[in-house]
Image (tube, helix red, strand yellow):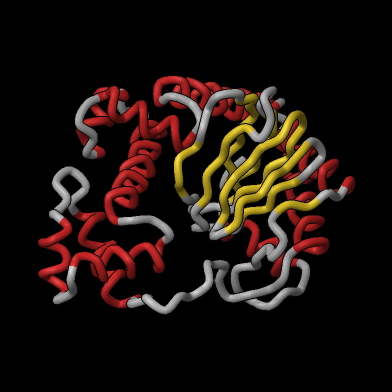
Length: 274
């Protein structure tokens, strides 16, 4: 489905490192318990629970029980969710979900139906059920707003941190040292790290790896070989890429690329058949 990524998995020992998505994250727990930090809170979601994560919110993920957890996840683009909200008559802006874990049978059924239809490659059913699921989640659990984000803390310096983010994005293969960054902004290194973490939820070095994984996904989607992706995205080697990629995406780069290519083939064959 355009504008939506899908994940279906069961994890026992896997642990997601701290990361954020540009998209929303809507996850239905089908088995076991997932435990994750979100903002400043540690949360647990059990079977039948639905996790509703806003865009750009830093979070983790790991098993909350010995048997691990299994779930289905939709990652819809904010523009898509905003479009559904507009169709509902909501004011312009990015809706936010104030409650992160809910136990709502109707929302769970809508999410599961949309995920299964997309997984089976039925474009008409998946697009229809997706909109129904998004509308249901919005009406039951969201509130209109300009932007979902973390609370502003006492150490925020948005303009300075925006400059750091831009500089790091331009130099993924060779990021400057913390002292160099602080010197350019006229800040001491400790204050810079504190402000950067308050603004983004991550320290600068972790934010660089976050950007590298995001770039790696784009390159893998375009068909670039994982070994070439590692060099282009600024990782030391393919093993370095694989380690960080799996911590964020949940699967190794080669498997991710294979699954994505299989999904494109399903869409292409569905389009040809229609």
